[in-house]
Length: 132
Image 1: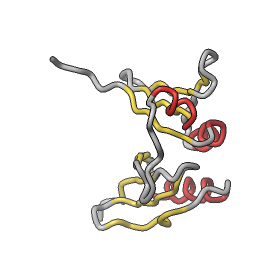
Image 2: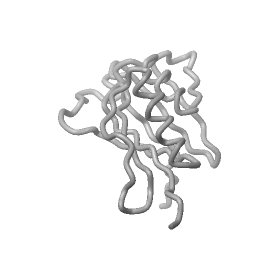
Image 3: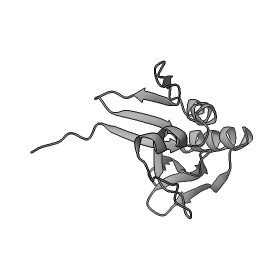
Image 4: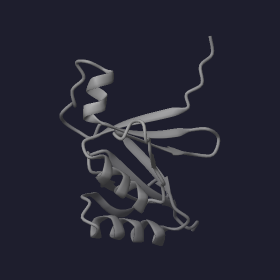
């Protein structure tokens, strides 16, 4: 049997807040009219990023509960330049989202920063540093 992984489902506490957060990163989610606690974003190549509220998750997966501790997931967004990483970090934190790691020049050759989405998932922002 060969399966195709084509969707990532993120459980969110506030669908509107999460859609607004990811919109700042250029993602456009569509809320499902039949399931108003579910939204999805389509990527080229057939990948779907879905957001589902905790309420709808408990309905579909009886016994589910949110884990405590460190961010449950990290998503990485690539930018065209280190300055764009700095600008995105400033825009996201300026909009009230919590920064986890301010922009820095990572030893692996990238400008890197991390902010947290409304549910505490890590959102890495990165761009290649200019070659020396």
